[in-house]
Image (cartoon, rainbow, N blue to C red; front, side):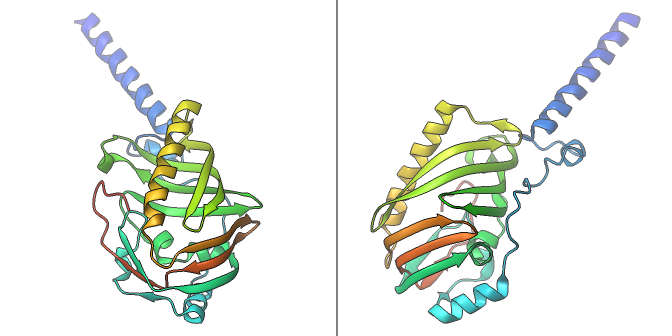
Length: 227
């Protein structure tokens, strides 16, 4: 009986240690422990706060229209684009973060931050990969660069990806980069009104020259749906 009790105690301790390790790593949400380790929310990368009034002024200046309810605009939603307007200016980070798509909430990805530097950027968010068939959830951080490849094309270079406190190995990083660029090639090609002449990541924002759609519709996000 004493031996059985000792075995039960050992198993409980091992289970607790395992749960603490998972919670600390930030790849699975464990009640109480994930919050204690700060892994229940995105990492703070020091990005600017969304400038809602600045975005409203930008929207009015360029005649941007949104044809769907605000709740529909998220990074997990399927968007529709139409119309066109010319743009040749620097767009501040705070205005980009105030767009409906980045500030919108979906269970899959939310609390998005982006920090822009000269030639590179860092993005952070909270990601739940469950709808895509992966039983992991936690804060994700991505360091990346963007290069223009054509009027409707960009190439993304992923310098580093962290899920919780776990860095993604180089071979998986390459596969992720290929998947992102393959997706973008298809998605950007289908956006009416898009013509990229210049796209530069600069300190505190993005410089864009070309044309963009001026009318945006969006479906409600669905579990496991790619936008």
